[in-house]
Image (cartoon, rainbow over all chains, first blue to last red; front, side, top):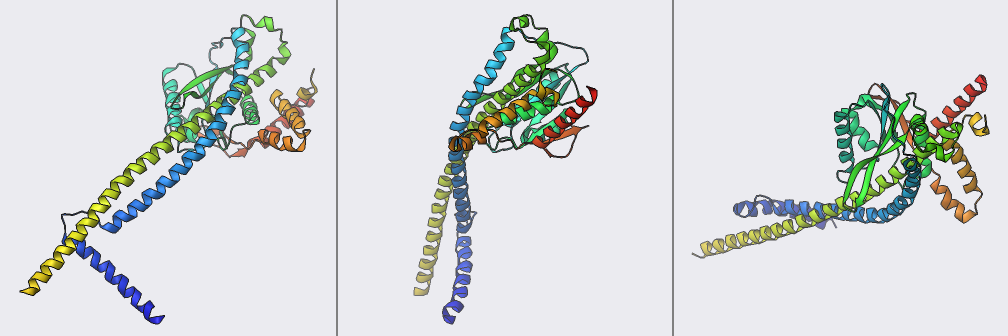
Length: 302
Length: 78
């Protein structure tokens, strides 16, 4: 027992010392030592494993998210249908503010969909004469927008994006928005529209204020009392929000899947590259050692 | 006031949420667990003033508090 334990450190020390010497003996072979390359290879393999797993998780979540998106679409579109039939237009009121609701999520690692949305918000802020206030849903856009438009942010919501958004989420957000003290002339909800599995674009749906609903040309056909108009507006906002959240969620999952797919691919490329480098270096080391032995042997022969 | 829930300070969305919760709770056991997952809401929110983020609060509790307040003020005015 004692012997083997005592012998081992010596062995190990010997191995460590001998290796750099052998490599330094052949400077043309490589700049990195074998062990360094091996360590990198190992860590890249681990990263590949992680990204692959995340991709699989995102894929399964994506199918659920897409189903939820298709279901939620009927909520949003039915509610929008009313305003389309009534030909509701946002009222351009002087001195009244508009509200922009940005639907992102808490989680990253999904490519550029959050920053795409932030960029769009900044573009709108730069180009419009309207006075906008912002409500941000999700930590990611909040962090980005708080750097550029912190003064305009009124509310921020967190905790979204863990799972498929529920209607209860949308209702609670709609309630809190309607509790805001300022009276907004129009409320724009911005979300990522799901074009197909690889392309999304931030677009806007509108939730109208009570006056603009009242003043729409064909609204009388619906025979809605003024008293319940506020209910309709709140409910329509919840519907639109639910639609936006669900579609944004599907986009995020799909973007995450793509991002993780690319990451795994890149890791695979790096692994092959490092494997080749590793093999070459090992060969060079062996050749160098052989040369040393042979020259040593031939020198002692004479 | 035409609606009892409006008089007690609820918004239409809150009224719907309460109604939906009651329906979910009256379902049979196996379906109820599935359905109740759809009613969960664990959002947090923060109010911003002058570019500074306020305290992070639970959204559900804040909504309830706001509605209780609305009920109180309505009772006084009527």
